[in-house]
Image (cartoon, rainbow, N blue to C red):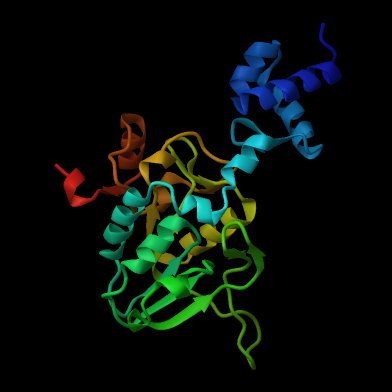
Length: 265
């Protein structure tokens, strides 16, 4: 019989080799219950050996790969992002209040707002001020907090304090446009950083309407941190139709999939 310490060492080695595994796979491989595997993974995560995810774990080295620097990610899937940005801009009404999160797809959206007018924009994306047309904006606010250099973004609370007023202002927006790292049928929308996930979730909770921006490369296994469940969004804007399982889940949850004109029909 395999001792617990030896089993955990073997699990750590297996996760490192596989990069991403599920509880079910580990349970079958090591011949123990799912609850036992979950406890082992929780301990290995606490020890800093791997990263616990919904339904499994990923290796630390795989997490580093997912945190590509922004300048590298700007060169990936550029055509898809431009199509998504142009389509997302059509949901934005003049004189409305919008929240936009960090991400390269969000930058494409900002560029396509050039013909809009009198917008109020709140964002944690430090590149937005350089990308959006000054003619389109009445007011632009950057949420404060810790700076993530790799993503050129801030991570902090979704609020502002005003001199002479006790407490934080309650913030609401007409539309939140949220670029995510992954879209999956079971977990919903996710990203690789906990702080970003919390901030994105707060933006969503403050919006009358929510549009998720994700190119087709994001359809697949969830990342480390869940942002929100599928049904929290009104729209999923992408450049290719989702695979059947995801498409069915989106439909069940009332999410409208928006595709560029050349992909509709």
